[in-house]
Amino acid sequence: MALCREPVARQAKLNLDSVTPPANPLVSFRNVFYRLGRQDILRNLSFDVEAGETLVLLGRSGSGKTTVLKLVNGLLLPSEGEVLVEGRPTTAWNSIRLKRRIGYVIQEAGLFPHLTVAANVGLVPRLESWPQQDIDRRVVGLLTQVELPPAEFAHRYPRELSGGQRQRVGVARALAADPPLLLFDEPFGALDPMTRMELQRQFLAMRQNLGKTAIFVTHDVREALLLATRVGLVHQGRLEVLTTPSEFLLAQGDEVRAVLSCLDTKGNV
Image 1 (cartoon, one colour):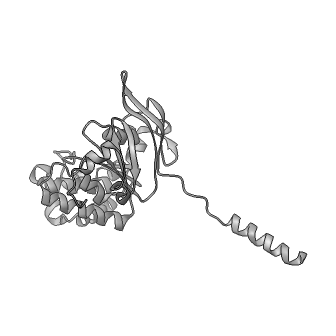
Image 2 (image 1 turned 60 degrees about the vertical axis):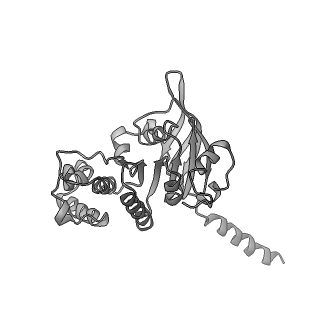
Image 3 (image 1 turned 180 degrees about the horizontal axis):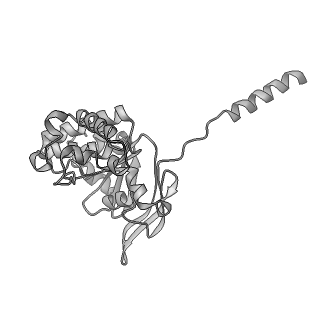
């Protein structure tokens, strides 16, 4: 019998040793406060964003959602607590290096008006000293991916584009250097409903094809439930709820009920 026990014990040890430890979250907030003077803008935020997920932060204007994004890419630093990106506190990152590891898409795209579409998209790869032929190839590939044919759009200037086209260029620019993390600050909020729906669908296709991690800010509950793998409800600087879209529909609390009242009676998005 002793001879039977030894191989079992060895096998058990082999199984334990072969287990791959869980990867660190791409972004972590640990008891984060952010203050302006004596006012708490964010209060004791703690959450993780895993690689490949889309966390949508939902809330009213002024709730602190955009402040979260600015803390992630180092535009702001926490008053208390830690924000970690790729396992490293933002206070330990080189500020420029951190920003180039993150794609940022804002409302109205924030394109440089004096640069062509191609130059806007290729900006970060150029700053990173990519070979020009690699930049050109990347620009063509991304413009094609966001459904802006390069032959037609690469040499245009932002003033020659519609709002939806500028947002597509903004997404392409955010993806250009292949960052692991994307931040979206109400990127579709100023668009007409049809264009907004088209870009939401494009975002979902991009997530499926590229597997990027994203933090997406919106005050539109329908957009949050459509795009998120998890929804975080921010209210008066606190994270009130953090759950899946389906569970969010069942969540309790005054602010949740206020948000969900924007949906129709059947809870349709």
